Length: 401
Image (cartoon, rainbow, N blue to C red):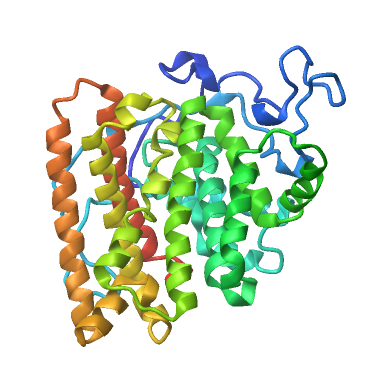
């Protein structure tokens, strides 16, 4: 571990802002529990008819919480970091704030056990384990030493990634272009179960509980719900839906045999970025950024810039692996085709764009310094740390080798 920190365990009530994390967690998310007055008893009058299976429950948690370490987010000068094989220009990217391989292994093991229990990645668990999503989340949330809270983000990100692999990208895993819009529509019902609709509810229930991707999304959101306010949970739902709009755009281009202009792709990509992952920063940090501040236009701009910079790293890391495929989902490949330049030249252009976006983020962060909200300042620094950890992970994950 690169930081020496207090690792003593204390009860959640001792730490400001973490009181809500103490005590036994609910057995299931509130929307699947009994309605008020029913006592949560299945079959009782007034009980929600929303579907629930034991394998959706994210599992037990410790009643003790390690302290948070927001001091690890203290901003340091941003370096130029080498990446990949070192043959391209460096990336202007925050340094990785914390590397703790033991914690990363713990979170990853918990994540793989969860995936096995709910039936996600059946037949591919070894490959899933090697990808190291638990390590990504540990790198991206350096203020948190709590494996339970880190697992919240790890599960949600793994579920998002699974919907990408199984629905959108990997035909060998069952992705079918014609089926994508309908599958994504069912995600809405999985994440936000609609009220009963008579005879039409049963087939919807069966569709949702029989698809491991939808089960993973429901289970991950159930874990978020243990630690998040209603506003934070709704934030996850709405941002997920926003991301899937871009997926439908990529799918339409691919199905029609169209190659989008680079600007059009980037417009979609900025709403399908690591912004989605970053919305959990305060949940994992054990606090809440109020909804009105999360919706602040300058804060939204800063978080979008951070998410865009991180997803450009993803495009850079993926370019070599995806070369020779349709270039519609990678800015490096799109620029190479559109401008008739080499992959190396296009890579340099994307590196320059990434570095400009990070400078834009820093300008937005400076402008936000005047906002008298400790939660907002901490969240923005969390996004900064996310960028640093994201680059570290892309440079090491088997997914990009």
